[in-house]
Length: 334
Image (cartoon, rainbow, N blue to C red; front, side, top):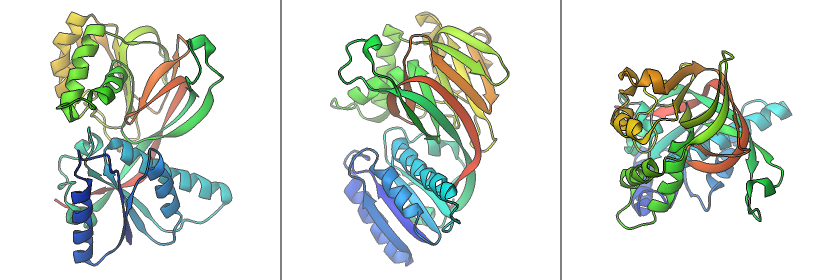
């Protein structure tokens, strides 16, 4: 087994050098075959993970960063597998994916409260494997370069990929957009930036206008506060907005919150953060919560802001499909 550690230098609020030192010292002391790679730009972790996935032998690839870095590594592994299948190539050994969380949200690893310390490098190296689902998506991606209005947008390009944690549209996606700006301000790191963005978005109450087709042929069309399409429970650095999600049940969880008033949602939000909101009597009027293997979303106003494991894009029609037990995820020894 060879161990690869893909380090996002922007993660960890300046602690990347210390993390690299810990990885090096621990790996050397355990006598394993390892490599440390520092990503150069967005998308670089995906390219590296795809490349090392093609190497012969068993390997473990650890994303050392946040959910975005983990998502890139997962997509690199899946792109390699798809390419190998197209070419009819036999597997070049097993591939495990792990995460050493040092990003802003670190939400996917929160789904494993009984696992060991994800920041313990030795526990990660000695960890066990859990098969986890992924969500495949196919979307129409729009680029705004040169466009002054939605009607001026060029034709979209097809984008496909996988989410290991969740997709957000509406309120949650708008919060992510603002959080990225907030994090550039002094004293606005992590969950502080997220909560400040929540406060601003509650005042603006900017949601989404969507046509949503569920697997059971139920359709919802119109304005809503948000919709989350998820594999895991958490977003925004620990907000348990999708409390019934399980990463290995072969189903994605879909949580749609209708066009609530500010007063309703402000009262509702503390329970939403804790994951107890579905027990509230208000939920029966405001929330549509389903488990499904597939879903289609079409923006009623041509485009929507779509958050994919923290990455923001402008999208059109999007189709989601569960991929059961698609990745071998490393759980650190307790």
